[in-house]
Image (cartoon, rainbow, N blue to C red):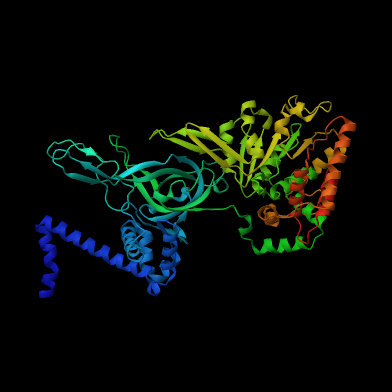
Length: 623
């Protein structure tokens, strides 16, 4: 009974004395925080200070960094129950974790931290069901630790945000400090945002800006990747707040995985309350993701088909893979081979003098209406792991490259990525390429050859990556292709832009009874739900052949040399002589570097030893 009385007495006393209840709650929360701090300290001091994270802290101090990355798998192995509570309620656990890290560094490395430095903890590893896309961020994830995968579309300028202000009163000689926390802070409840100008007695205060404490603040917008967005729906996005050492860790066009706390932010003061809140992710760690096609999982059926391709002859394998692209389209075998080479790509080079040689192949289709140009663009988008589609009439120059916009709520300048930046390491499909304006076409010159987009507007100067292939389709300006004129006059494109396309094909609607019978037979096969093929070979699933050429793009693959280079040189010289005799172009612009890129893409279909000369001869035969 005495035990029960002492057990129930605090609740009875707290019920009658509210001030005592608050004091007891503060003491309890402080005890819980100290217990959590001791738990995290023991995690850092595993193996008597010689464990994995003691070495990580030592490396962090040597590299002058203030954020320790903790793998969630390691923490689950240390204490699984606490790891689960950390995922569900990180706001209560992260301050204790950071206090433990701060105390450990001050003990082991006392000369590292300064009064204005704050250490932080970032979480990596497996998030399980908490690894989501912006579309999957629903109310059930509020106040939990999540990892959001997406592509950066907008970034704001880095601004300083005051976290502690220092004020001096000349009349009394007192120094007043004030801490500031907003709704995105993880260290405590939000404080008032009023900035003191007078003390309690009405004496004026002078702000000592040199003694104030600031933190860098930036907002980025993460959008779900184009290949994962459902067809016919707008892509979803979420704002991510980055502070401290995380600012400027990503730029528009980067694919990232950002871990942080998903929070609800109330509307601005004075606005009507509707019960709907804006949500943000308070960033905790930013990890860059690479578009590595070699890591794509293969099913047993895919592995069996790849093994079947391995035993084929190289020429037959190349034909089967080409026919697997848009099998419902009749003919255009050479164009399909070119699309396959574009998807596989060449090998980009970064020379010692800083010169960048692109490995991506740019392809342009020119021809009469109704020859399946747009259909081949759509088929390429389905096959390519990363593709962005647009049209010449509906796209502007800044929409294709990048733009500087103004945020409607804060009035800050934002850098927004365009289609070519979003398609970094992928393919940009531009239909109705001839309908673009002259000013808009000039903006993509740099992106097509140098594979960068440089912006110098509104005080913002930066260079974004646009390492992508451009696949365009254009119609003749006179309705049908005129053989008496060159390609440049048929589609009214300047030579400066046309020369940036490695492969240019002219597709004609020929009036032939044999051609019409073949098309009719092919269409009937499609409607009978059979696999149509041009020469009896059954096409494969287009996605099966994607991993075959990843080495051509990811590795520093073969470089044409020796007799292979001589064959390429002879092919170009012979083509130039034929052009001079015909006094016209045959629709194919090839330079030596372009021959090398197509040969490297052609070798991506090989599965045997190096055979550069065969690549060059095959390219010459296709020409």
